[in-house]
Amino acid sequence: MRIPVGIIDVSTGEPVQAELFDDVTIEDFLETQRDWRPVVLEAAQQLTRAGGRQAIVPRHFHWDWTRKEGDLRMLVNRFYGIRREDILQGLAKFMTAGQVCRLSGQAGKPLVYVDYLEVAPWNIKPLMGALGKPHRFAGVGTRLIEIAVRLSVEEGFKGRLGLHSLPTSEPFYINTCAMTPVGPDATKQNLLWCEFTPGQADGFLRR
Image (cartoon, rainbow, N blue to C red; front, side, top):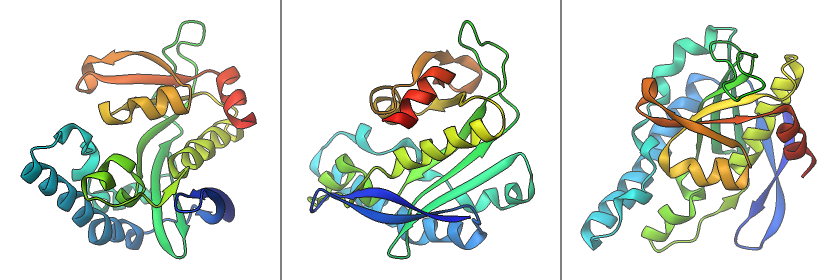
């Protein structure tokens, strides 16, 4: 699958066309290590030199997508990426089994689990601010959450979605996506568990 999706070019404030794809390969994983990680490292080093807040450095900066190569062959896992001008702008891994709903009223029901979601560092405003540069594109993470919701609908889960949020990502999931924060999960380093109900998922897609 390769379909056009809209993201925002921050330099102009105008929507531009990117490409969503699901034929993710190890080459895409290698691209994150080659092109993404050095940018995050440079920003972290600059913050250290300037005495800035390390809290704005995404906690996923150490992720190594190449370790997920074996997951590409498992049917329960779905990988999606977004490219603009043939540059990888975002990458996500969703699971169609392994987690269930925890919210009252839908506890135990199946959902799509957002196992990993990462956007390219040049699309993270605070990170680029540490380097004195503007971020490039907005909406990449939102488009990846959108495909997760649509996958949930296709699987018969009615848009139900769940994830463990890193602290730096909580504003995105709670404020931007309007997911419901359920509470910290002691089995997952006390990361905040967030969910979409079918109604919330429908509202998200209609925005």
